[in-house]
Length: 110
Image (cartoon, rainbow, N blue to C red; front, side, top):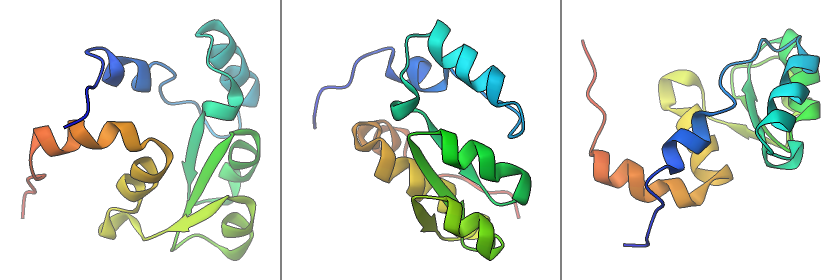
């Protein structure tokens, strides 16, 4: 298994949630953390996500998103119920895959 830095998960989550229509906040946080926008990923499914998808260096739209949202993204992934966000993260950040394997399968409440 490849070596993964101990703080990779914290680095990955450092940018945190940014409201899709608050691009100024997204730019400021990425700059303050020294993360180029080219390395920021955005995942969305609604019209208000379009500016965020266009600004981020890597973007994915969920399969159930409207056509204009899918067109704004770099790639389209399966729907939420099919773990599309996880697929997007796997594709954008393959180095995180060892963390997912180490965590084991997700558990779901019925």
